[in-house]
Each structure stands twice: as C-alpha cells, then as structure tokens.
Length: 68
Image 1 (cartoon, one colour):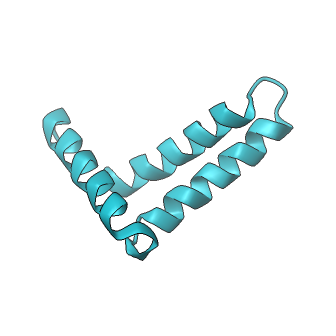
Image 2 (cartoon, one colour):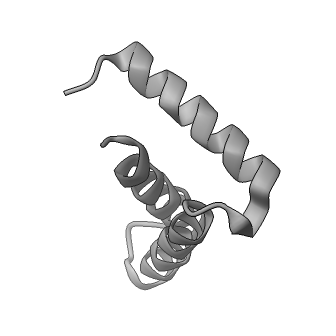
C-alpha cells in the first residue's frame, strides 16, 4: 500500500497530465466513462442525484487509475 503523500502526488500529476493532454491521455476516457455511469445511476437511484452520481463515478474511476 502506498503512503498518502505519494498518492496525493500521483493524483496531482495525473490530473495535471489529463488537463494538458485532454482525450489523448489514457486516464481521461475511463474517468469520463465512470462519470457517465455515475450520472445515470444518480438519475435511476432515488437517494442519489445526478451531480452526486457524476462526481462519485468520476472519483471512483480516477481512484482506480491512481491507486496502483
């Protein structure tokens, strides 16, 4: 398991690279897909809302990309 500061550094580097490279970056499409799935789940589930589902889906997809 990685240290929290290492994880924070990887997250910062990943977000920066995604912002610079856009859809060419390998993490962008999975994170956008996770956001879309979360948004649909937010519409379907009675407790969650669209923005909450979108954020949760994107966050989970991003987490799975950086936790290696």
